[in-house]
Length: 159
Image (cartoon, rainbow, N blue to C red):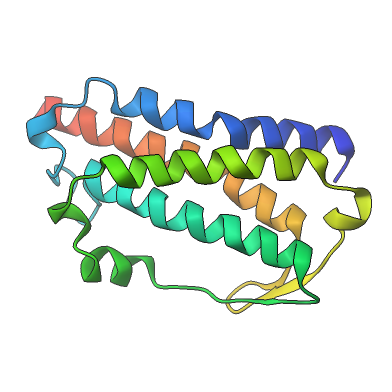
């Protein structure tokens, strides 16, 4: 990955919070827990997932940078959504955790050296895992969920 490609992905990563906030803007408050698309999470569940996933991802990056060949453990996001009853709890704090994880991670990404980008770890599901792998995943993560929130809002309108 080139330096310019990394810069583009870092900018996309930094923009993820704005993208999710825009997707949530105007979402009907009384429908935040609705499941208009069968088998898909509600908007509230998505925000709780973002809070958990993004705080976890921030630690993953830090482990890659601080530890020698860390093992990055996968987790079952569906289990977490059920076990932590995402749809039963207000999502404001989860949204703030998502914001905070991104806010404290952007400066880390911008200050990384070439050797930092080449560090290696091992993901229990995906195998070799580097900061570049991490960046490719999380630069797209919030945008993908923002798209899901928009599709949920569209499905509510169509019902």
